[in-house]
Length: 219
Image (cartoon, rainbow, N blue to C red; front, side):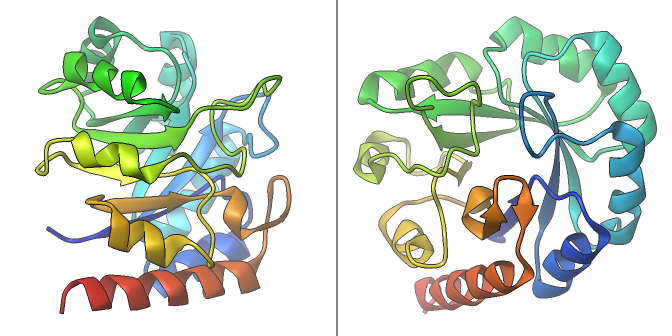
């Protein structure tokens, strides 16, 4: 299986182009007004055209209604819908049926109890994304720059297809790849100079560290 590297929360042509040039397999656009990474569907569509055919385009939403998804899907034409809220298994099935797109379901992880929720979504979600649970007081389900205890993931089925997210950066991504069985990594705040502001130098450093670790894991 090819290892995935997803850069999420992109908002400028320069960062999209650089991420794809460096080897990003997925680029994510966030449609959540409370996030500093929020973007309008029409603006995201223009950015996606830079990367399309080289990377998968991911639309990230949080408990979005169909009216919002209608606009996002029509304008962005994403390859994948990432549901990052409290969407039920039935809601995931409904989204897949309505839009005919694969769904990546995100989960907020803090304890082993949180991992038990995945069972109801197996054979429904096309892929999982495991993120750190938001700290008290945060209004964001992701992008908070914190990691969770990766040791919890030892209990998962070794064949489970999931991306690891939450607090990843150039300094810890190698350990994340080495210590977990993730099939992909997702970064957002770890390559920013300020909330919502991607930093090309940090993107480059992250990719260098990640790709070195991926190569070492395959030896």
